[in-house]
Every structure is written in structure tokens, then in C-alpha cells.
Length: 249
Image 1 (tube, helix red, strand yellow):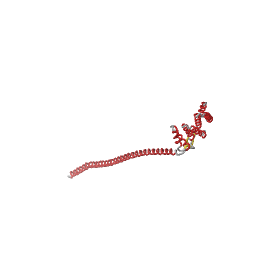
Image 2 (tube, helix red, strand yellow; image 1 turned 90 degrees about the vertical axis):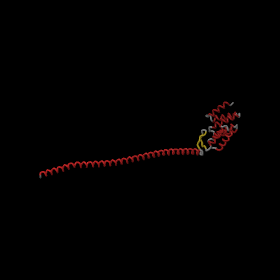
Image 3 (cartoon, one colour; image 1 turned 30 degrees about the vertical axis):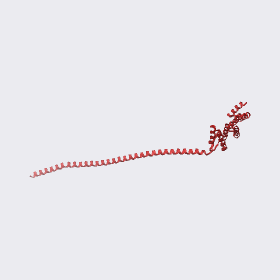
Image 4 (cartoon, helix red, strand yellow; image 1 turned 45 degrees about the vertical axis):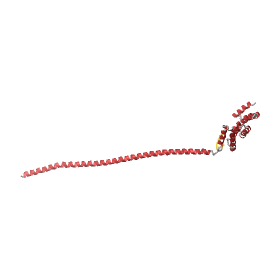
């Protein structure tokens, strides 16, 4: 009976050991699943965090892109404004230049100017050129009476003008056109006497000779023509005088 009791004790111990052996792997399997589940949860948490960070970064990049577009638009607007301002400045500068050029031109009309008249240089006072041109235009249009009056007025008003010899010469022509032979001869003689070196002097002498010939004063005309040749032998006027001398009988 004792032997049987011992066998029963051994059998019971074996059962307990078997149960223990069977329970050990099951517990270990449950422990591994919890770890895997926790790892998955941790990974999911990290993934969600990264996704949130990525979304935030994308929003930041989008915001920066929008800001960059706005800045580019502002730069383009500023560039256009700068171009407009540059064009406006160029326009203003041109207007100022034109204004001062015009003002300078107007002021010069009131200042004495160096000018060459019939090859002779001199100082022209304000208004001289306009007055001379007005008288000349009257002569060219055939208004000899008013032309003569205008030349006389010019000669009296501008005694130092470089136009003086020329004005006197054309006054003589206006008088001649009005058949004032005596007056024209006297005027031309004044040109020869007062401005012997002026280019109009030989022309005035030749005009005097023509005047004399028309009045039948052949001797006086010959003498005048000889004076032209003697004083202005190298000029074209002297050649004309020589030709007329050969025609006087």
C-alpha cells in the first residue's frame, strides 16, 4: 500500500509538471503580442505626428509661396511705378530743357549779338534784324515808298548797326525806283564816302553811273565807271563797269 501511495505521488507530480510545462509557452505568447501591439501603437503615434508635421510644413511652404507671389507682384508693381516715374522725370527734364532753350532764345532777342552782314561782322542790337528785314520785304513786294520810309527810319535809329551800309544802299534803290534820281545818287555817294571798303561800295558807284547814264550825263558816268575800275579793279563790279565803259560813245 505504501508502494502504491508513492506511485500516486509520483503520478501527481508528473501531472503538475506537465501542467506547468503547458502553461509556460501560452504566457510567453501573450507577452509577445502585447509588445507588438504596443510597438504598433507607438509607430502609429509617430506616423500621426510625422503626418501632422508634414501637413504643417506643407502649409508653411504654401504660405511662403503665396507670400513670394505677393512679393513678386509688389516688385512688378514697383518696377512699373519706377518706369512711370522715370518716364515722367524724362518728360519733365525735356520740358525744362525746352523751356530754358526757348527762354534763352527770347532773352537773346534783347541782348546785343555778333552777326555778319554782307561779309562784315558787327554787333547787332535787339530789333535791328527784324526792322531791316521788314524794310527789305517791303522793297521786294514793290512797296518802294514805304520801303524808303522804313530804311530811313532804320538808318536814323541804328547809326552804329552793321546793317547801316546795306540799309543805305537799298534806300538808294528804293529812291531810284521812285524816280528820285538826285536823292538816290546822294544816298549812294554817302555809302561810297562813309564805307569805301564795304562790299556795297562798288555796287553803289555802279548804280550812280547807271543813274547818270539814264539822265544823259555820259561824261559824269564815264568818270564814275573809271572810279569803279580804279578802286575796285579785282571785283566783279569792276568788270561790269569796264564793259559799260566800252559801250559809252
